[in-house]
Image 1 (cartoon, one colour):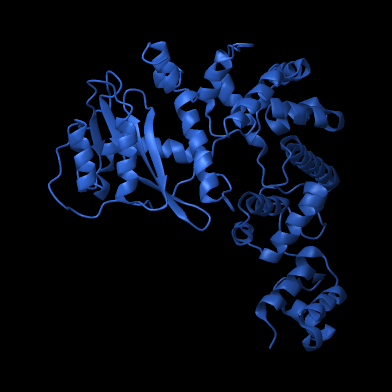
Image 2: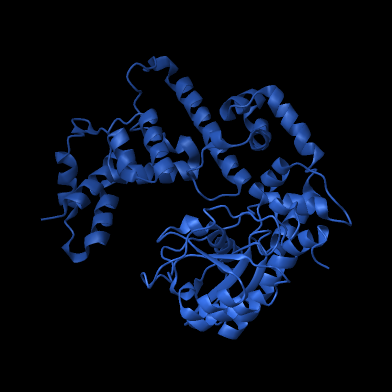
Length: 459
């Protein structure tokens, strides 16, 4: 009439954790209340258990190795059932052993009634005390290593593996242990050579030679909106006119990794599409995925992307010059209509000089197949080019721009309560930065505007 799991837990408390029969009965009473069995019923459960022998309580005869194995499996995986299976015990025992291990270390698992020697490791009776002392000392050292590992890594997760420490971190652990356990035993416990230990001590004593650089890198990372990777940070350090820093990319990458300076790029499961089916003959694909141009205003690409904001949606339509990636013109609209695309194209052609007749490449969206768009292209001598149906790589230059824009400007930021007008202003500021101050490796670490000035193509 009583739950099997509760009965097993009560018996395990008696045999494996050394809890008295009276306390076990109180525990069962706390769990079941008025419906709890009498103490003599709990005593009968204990007597009927296979572990009960003529001498009374016999214990489960779990070896120290078995207990440690179960605790380690539990700490590494968090799976009490798997740990119980590894030791052939109950999950209740695993939880109890793990608690004692965290509080007292390996010595807490030496209970005196359940620590039989493993087969093949029996110790002569006269040496029982010495062997037990050696085991307890080894367990104390193991527990101390785990304690110092958690302290060194400033982590609360008990499932840490000391073997994952760097040599410098192991050196700090050995320094904390050597006074209590001796240098040789501490080195063996963390798996560190003596020469490596002394080298690590010298390096720690010398201090962090990159302390000032760390602060500078962190400032640059924050100034860039937490979207710049190590290559851009590395280049900005060298381009600093007041105090340039010459250091390898590997050092910058390692410092950013150690300081947790990682851009987080979110991905959206779905994307908006302007394709509405074939509504007429499409022009040929004149670009054929070659998005290079030898001069400005030779090849333009365009597309439309959607932003889902706080309670509203809006659409961006830009024109990108494939010569250097400059945003020639753009419009933001609450509706992805023909007026949005036509206005953007009129703004773009207004920047053309005499004789400029670029190819304007797009996907097969409906914006680029309506009469107004076609008329503007014909009046200003623009040559239309279109991707294949449903083939985003055919317009990779525009898709790449949208990816950079959303990674650096949109994703990972709180847009709660930001109105359409505020969003428009922030987007305008970002696109100005994109053209004038955002450096690119492909342009010799210059922005599009800086690159054109460098070539004498802009004043």
